[in-house]
Length: 174
Image 1 (cartoon, rainbow, N blue to C red):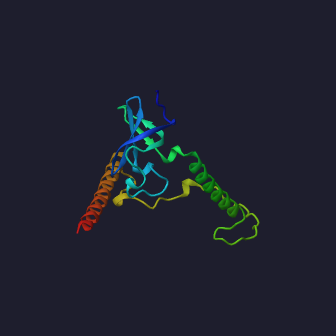
Image 2: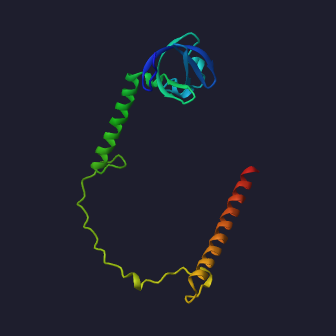
Image 3: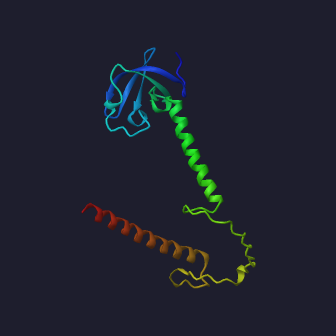
């Protein structure tokens, strides 16, 4: 039997661990259902949901290059999945309807007239002055000088940030 990602098949639970269950798929193949894929509800103890020897429907989620097969029980049940999707879509549609009506906090409001766009005047970039000049750099300095000052200022700022990060980390350990 050829396994493909997305196919739903029946298998028998052969082993249970804290983090998941192993399922025999037949043909000498087996896969694992992670604890998060057992049920759509929170699973604290996997033994409450599965027993060794139990036959379960599983969906093939992935097949790794090393041959490991990841399975899901909760994705193998289309009815539950579609029901949750319908609920989510209904909630989204209700939210969109409220947004359209101006209801952001549960109170229906009348539509407000559209605001007029603000006219933006073009900005003359040549007339702008830049407020940042690193470490009192003179304007007649060459490009190389300005670049070296910028790099020095950047390194100072980075070391300050690293020191703050180290202080925060050391404060958490206490």
